[in-house]
Image: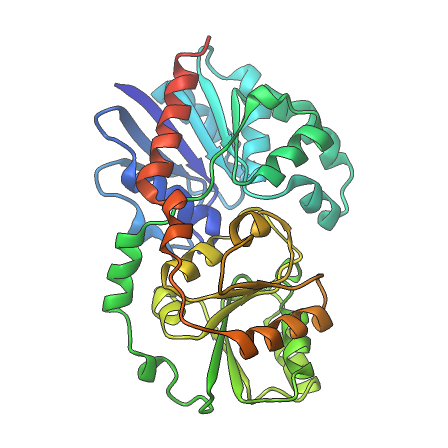
Length: 368
């Protein structure tokens, strides 16, 4: 049985963390002995999803750079066959440490974002050099979307043979269970303005998610018979609340913070709106479709179009702007109908995607 060490910075409520834990819940225990190491588990939003039958290690380090010594010691002590990491900054740290780690270990990274966009956002050009130099030393980089793979190959000169596209999985059984156990529509919308259309937006309240675009877009729509619920926390919460006042729709926008069961929200609204500037492969879109809730989206750089192209009942704006998103919302309001997204979701079923991950790990274990 092959030993695989999964490494993740934290158990926050991010999409990458959720995907990583889905992989851990479903990976075949008869093929792999699993250990999960978390740099810092103080934020325990998703810790309840860690499987009980795997070894769990909390490195108790405030940041990745503070935990490098503990990561090195753990790898030397446990001697896994494969180290599997996720989130860009941890991936970079692991592959940079590779020369001082034991020989004959395979290193796999799950890339969590579009690197060129991340570096542009951070305005730290030296990071481009670092990723370009070190990332090619991974045995395999798993990309969530074709766009992400092309970004690594063209912008960072990563050999294509070192990359593999595996879309994010959707666990329909888990989601359906959470929907059944969640609150009802009346409970969720209690205290909100009675509206014929209920919109939902989900994500960290950060600039890249474009919630400012969404709030402005809604202010453009003349028919105000709607409300918007935003699920998620982040540094822009106060600023976005002020923006809703500025645009005169503060009575229509509700900030609900982090929700441990967002699936009940997906199920009981009319549409999800995604307003991002870029997305690797947005889990919120798959989760919404899994709840049979249509999606209205900006044409965010990345994997959004790979999911939503030709999906009837969903709409994409022509550009990432408030005016264009407003036009898409208005069009959707005038054309909406009953939908069934099961065919779209078939290719993302967790059983199919986990098989691809298992094959990727086994291939690299046998690849000399």
